[in-house]
Length: 275
Ligand SMILES: O=C(O)CCC(=O)C(=O)O
Image 1 (tube, rainbow, N blue to C red):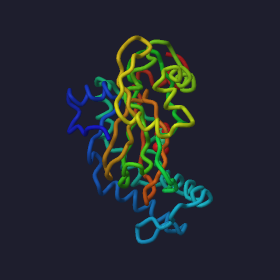
Image 2 (tube, rainbow, N blue to C red):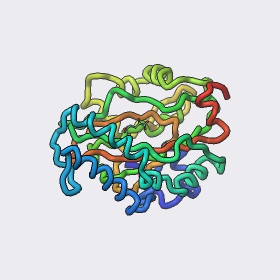
Image 3 (tube, rainbow, N blue to C red):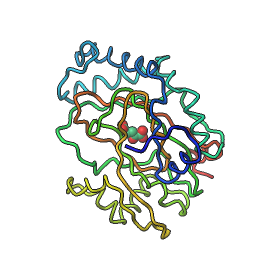
Image 4 (tube, rainbow, N blue to C red):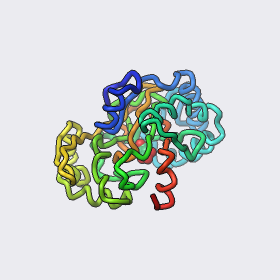
């Protein structure tokens, strides 16, 4: 977990610039989050996966998981409660972290992230590490992604994993796709280890901070961080931060809501390929 910050003041901005993420505890009011959780649990109940607001499908198979994904997506697209998670304070926080610059969003509501509780053990994943946006080569944060816990997300409970510090790498080489960022990073021993298929136990060491020499000679501290928390807690993450899906060994599904706030001056460049 990242150290929580009370507000986005200078110290909060510095922590964001240094680590690529900050945690705001209880940023989204509990009643709003609970309403979304209740709607999702009503769907689980309809599919026989929950009862009285509690998950009951121990180790759900792929078939049940697949059956739940579509309805969650469809329901959330229609849900005023889901839209109400996009509180103005989130956008304000993103603006604060982008030196006061305006932001753009391409959706009016967050996307719900669902990971069923189907894993037997938790390891730092070696695959699906990616970026949602290319490196633009402008050296500035292109935007902020929010991750709000809709239910408790305990350690090992499927919270998104992010590489704190990775936002500082490969910023001086022009536009680079997510795939090529990964390819270039894999030349650094820390990332060779992260992407290695074997050695789940060795990868565990990546959960502790390690300082490496970056491509431009700077010292950068890297650490795999799990986005865990209580309902309403929000992580604000630099969009340049490498991240992946994680196994869920808890007794309940991982439920989170994510939204992306793009720096207005570079938002178009992300999609049209020009700066
Ligand atoms: O489900 C997750 O934890 C991964 C989320 C993710 O990769 C994304 O929002 O880009």
